[in-house]
Image (cartoon, rainbow over all chains, first blue to last red; front, side, top):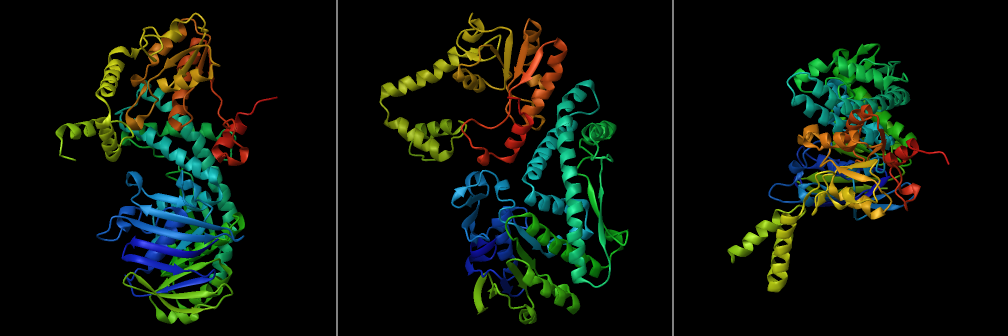
Length: 378
Length: 198
């Protein structure tokens, strides 16, 4: 999948910007605050229904304007054209997304159709931050390759909110509460087991991609591994896993009623990343964190490329500024093997290092929310 | 506010209170009323009053009716051994249109939804249990296929089974007239789960 043309209206500091995108590399160069990242955000909004920077659509609207609009023309690997448009606020003050001029019934329809991998400073927390960031990474990748997983996740969250509402409405455990919890517990258990099983098999399939990516970026035999931490502490591979999960819910019920929230389940699980057997959160250096994050994302690209019908697009937001020359050179060497790639940088000297590739390279200068053609190389 | 007429503003405000009616639609409706003949407006306002004065809920099945008990509950042609439980009266209309169901109904008046503060006490569950104990042989649970409907189904089945009655639920699967290739994954999974021998 490639983006052929992108148009932004009233997105952050862009009043009206429009660019053509070759199938190879789109380079966006400009000062900090010029509006480079907003262009990548726009691509993300079209492909995934949201920005990777801000979770609140309201904050994306240009100051003094009422409505933002992003429009993109895409082309599949087979040459079929699609259009996606994103407007906020649309009806009922929500975002309105049109795919080929027809409204989406659910944003879930976009997942996996316009595959995208994003690497931005925002993602640092995946290797160094709390468990929510890693669950977010996991859920995002698995949802793109497995639609049923996304539906399970949405159902799980809804059931969980009902269960938590029940817990919050009761001060202590009573037979009435137990009876009312039962149907939600049973729905929660069924979803939880499917989610954790799917995560486990994803981790097994994805790990080699992660290791390969890491080895292409740094020398040495460092092999990162994953360890899934199941908050329910049950064997989800067992035939009676749903019953075991309900047993775990039962054991934590006193605590849950007191706190008014559910303390175990896929929404509390974590994914440890280990390097030489040590948890990277506590033991990795700054340099190792950078390499790990880039490897996770490059691995994600190759994983999605193997598991989807379309080649994913890649967004590299301000990635080069913090790398030493050796790592930079290795990453630049990988770029031609990735799909259509969008790169932002504030460092003009990087521009000459970006390789010429067969898909063509377009260079734009971004300044104060406007995009200027800088040069174009075939 | 249009503010050239207080009466018109008032009518717009009244229409805006209806579900699914936004400010602009309310304005359009109000201006339309202005164009109607006096007789038509009288008919319409009488219809609104009649519906409030004459329609009540059936003391047996809780469906909306003008006569209590309702025509379904009093009909000699209905099979009194089967009770079909639905969330709302609109579900009764939907099933009645098929002409395929000859049993009785029970309208719960909603579904369990702790997020909205709706618990078992807010639904007509005691009435259902009384009716079931009073000679029913089968209770069909026909809740909508979302998580709240599922939870309600599970909750009710726990209460009903000890009464020695056959408890069933309506099937979930592909809508008639739809091709498999256009169905969403969840529907196909459920349809496979609920497959039957031929």
